[in-house]
Each structure stands twice: as structure tokens, then as C-alpha cells.
Length: 136
Image (cartoon, rainbow, N blue to C red; front, side):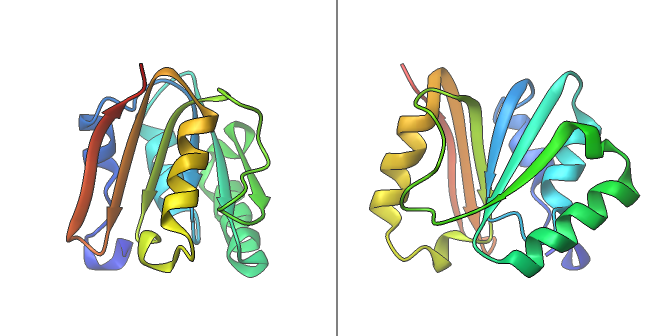
């Protein structure tokens, strides 16, 4: 995605995801979340994915890129996120929605872990964008 100019960092920032602790679902090699960290201050990121190999690559990229102290990567299933309720200020994902086995379940989980006033930005393959979604 990055090599094709499809990294959605500016869109995520325009959606208002600019502060706090964010959850990135399906970080792949980590480029999107790492770019977001570089362009924001006083932010932290948890990348959550299903591929151990991709998460290992994301960790290596974080070490090479610099903001490794502001990011952690966790392995697991999207339809049951292993996080506390109302834990994240924001959730974003790019290019993984089409791979979600249970999109409804994943969106329910996103809503569960999102803090009141939190924001969600989901995009996939440059076609589908779910922009600003604020939790009351």
C-alpha cells in the first residue's frame, strides 16, 4: 500500500485522530501506524493483527523508524479484541476490512474498546472509507 501511494496517514489525521492512545487493526508491516506516530505528538499506538510474521516485521520497522518506544504489537483475533472496555481514544485500519471474517463482530468490538468521544477511521483498498465516527 505504501509503495503505491495508498498510505492513509493524512486521512486519519484529517479525521481528527491526532491524540492519545490509538488502536490500529491489521497493521501489516506497520508503516501506517508508524507514519501516524511520526506526525503526531504525545501519542501511543497498539497494533493488533493476526499474522505473527507481519507483526514481527512491524516491530523491526518500528525499531528502524524510531518511535518504537510509543508502539506495541499484539497478536489475536479481531472478533474478540483482548482489551478492556473504553481503552482507546481512537481506532483506525487501512486495507484489512476485506479480510475480516466477522466485520459486524469486529465493529462491535471496536465500539466496546473505544472511549466516549473517541474516533474511528476505516478504509480499505482505496474504495471504502468509513470516516469520522464519534462515540458519544
